[in-house]
Length: 107
Image (cartoon, rainbow, N blue to C red; front, side, top):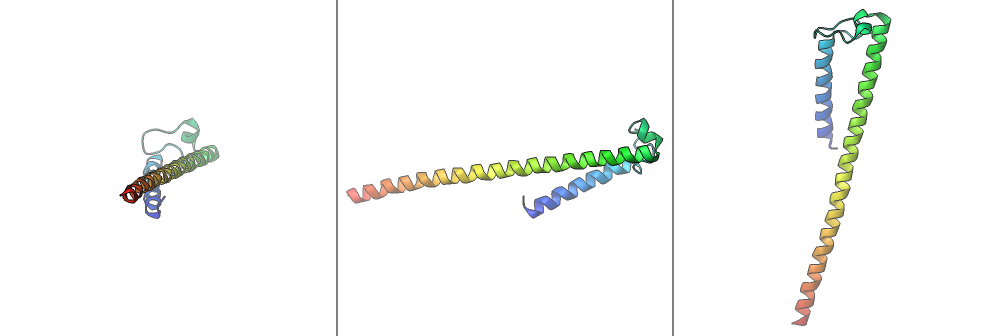
């Protein structure tokens, strides 16, 4: 991926995380601002709430990394496909050029 695309994607993801964390309130400190508490453990706050919040953050970070890796693989596969297509088309061009040379030679 280009640096600009990576930068834009990273910026977008950070913005999304910040927006969602604004709705949550401080992680592990009980119910958030968005109206939903996120479950009884998080609503209670304390050490268990902080632990669950940390586990959720790790989970979503891991999911994000998996999605980025899958996207990277997809683009690499697309690049390989297009390179092979270019090679195939170049062979076709060379074949046609050979026919033209043969026609010129036959004149």
